[in-house]
Amino acid sequence: MSGVGVLGAGAWGTALAQSLASDGRDVLLWAREERLVRDLNATQRNTLYLPSAKLATTIAATSDLAAMAYLDVLLVVTPAQHMADVLRAMPARPRDLVLCSKGIDAASGQLLNDLARSIAPASEIAVLSGPTFAHEVAAGLPTAVTLACGGGESQWERLAPVIARPALRPYYSHDVAGAEIGGAVKNVLAIACGVVEGLQLGQNARAALIARGYAEMLRFGEAFGAEAETLAGLCGLGDLVLTCTSTASRNFSLGKALGEGGDPQALMADRRTVAEGAFTAPVLTRLAGERGIDMPIAEAVRAILDGASAADIVARLLARPLRSEQGA
Image (cartoon, rainbow, N blue to C red; front, side, top):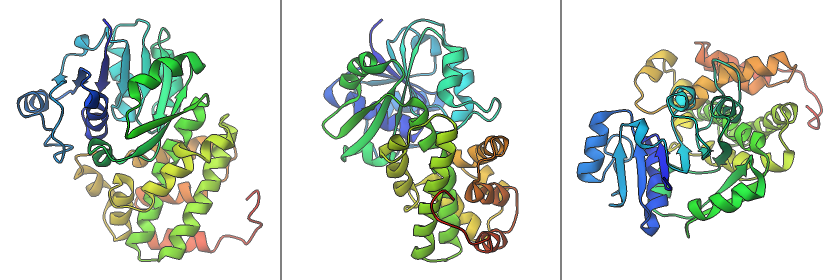
């Protein structure tokens, strides 16, 4: 069966479904929660995750994974830590899987594209990533993204017409690892920038943190096969700037609350939406440690999430030995 589906009806999945349906295309949107499916189909609104958007009438919701199984293109927008379970429940067959979540699988330590390839070897894997606030995409505001295709230009030629819209402009890349690493690392750095905001450390500190955090992203990316050019683009630096400067970012908002003295466990338990950076920080720093990659900002975020005082951790960062900016 030809067609396009979206796995995951959070804010980002719903926004992507809305974008895909903006030219009248039929889109099937999968959600785990039966109540959400009923509301989506009855009202064409996602009142839980994206209440601002009135959805296209060509979007239909389902909680039945079997209904998604024979679509040719699936955008996978489940939380990163649940992606593997959802893909394992899908019958194996050739299809395009476009991974749209940002994170590293905590259980295996794998990038999501590597994990997806091991679970669904018959599929061709692509990664869609970039500076994308869901409410803006759903409203049809201009957005540009990286579409990294593991299947190369032939996959790009299949997927670009499916995903591109007048207000959603994809740019081709072959660097799947780079597209993923940019999205995963920037979530952790956005928490750090939120902490700076919560501690009221000023704009100078945030700009410095973005620059030094970008250096950490490059070091980690290089060690895992990413290209620096990719990380300098939409899915790396572009996404980093967006999510490190706005409370519309879930990760930035979490960091701000931590900087204001919030308890990490209470803050995480109280959130309906997932701040993926909180799950990525421990596995990111573990992988970095195993390869000897210096990531002091990511380590600081992990320590704060573990309950350390944000003010104390910042003081330790500022007391690090002076060194050259290049290569440090």
